[in-house]
Length: 121
Image 1 (cartoon, rainbow, N blue to C red):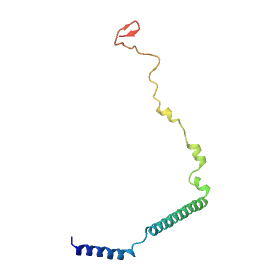
Image 2: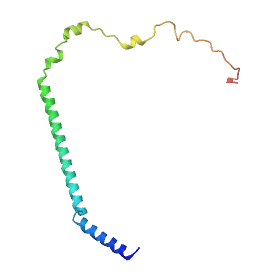
Image 3: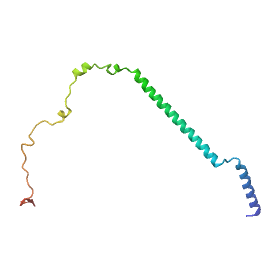
Image 4: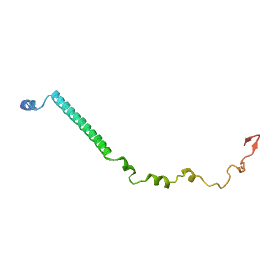
């Protein structure tokens, strides 16, 4: 590399540094700006979430007050319901019909091996 290349490189480096020196902010300033932006967004999210929860609670209370107690039984007559229903235990349907006595007759077991003094061989 020649002397003119070195001089040109140094001049370019100094010129570039002088141009960028005013445009590039300090790291601490950038960090403080990012933290304040994050804090503002966090507060905004918290406020919006609180407002949404309050609006939902208000809607539940208002709708609960508008709806009357009588609307629950509006289309159902309790007397007719009590007199026309029949209840049977669900297990009665699931039980098998009595066809044979399971415990009365124990079948004879055919032994596949001979016993010798109580031990099977």
